[in-house]
Length: 336
Ligand SMILES: [Zn+2]
Ligand SMILES: [Zn+2]
Image (tube, rainbow, N blue to C red):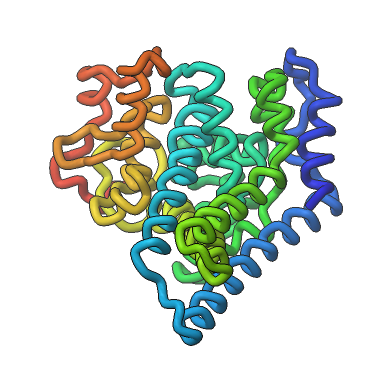
């Protein structure tokens, strides 16, 4: 995994001048990188299995989760989740609003704690997803493989887009997809310290559990619920977005792909399940486009704007909403 930092991040840093070179490849074909990518995905699986096993062992030994564990889980999930949705996704990938440097750094650090790869890697991969939207080159479409070939079954497509892709997708080149971020010295430093942030994301809930309960079992419970199981939960939310949010749900807007909206997943994904809204208006910081579409991340961006910490929110106009509105049924029968 050290290689993925050194090569996908440091190498593009060395190669890329702020001016894009027309021949900078979109993906990096390196065996080392592929191995590092697989190792990182396997590490996530180990963390998840460890979390589930330890939670069971702790409960069996008389330490079932109580209010403190659930509180640590909720607080860490919301903070790290916002780092992902408000930070990695809406601010850094789509530049949907501007923010003060301390806010940018805080969002980048919190998002890194999710253990979903470095900031530059995450942004590059997600920009590639939008570039190809359910067509050849999309790293995690449930409808078509990255090389353009078809899946043998819908189930295989859903499996690949849920979790399978994390082990085998093309490695996106940050020098092509994220050169705006590569030019930022502060973010480059945050990016290089990825493993420190992942470690802090585990150490802080451990400390909180230990201090709040005053026992070693409390510290272990904090690690399990605020660290391992939080990573498990938020990965599943993102995997839902990469897969079923392109299969099940309503299509309220014409987006040029097969993305969908889901009211059921709105709260646990902190608003990211309004994925059809997002694909139709990728630069929109707030996905609350109909009265019932509650978007917690959008609310946080509004609060940041009210506090003067964020500005230049690129909200779609009424005319833009009308131009892309799907027929009132939000029918799934319509294709792109
Ligand atoms: Zn999508
Ligand atoms: Zn996006």
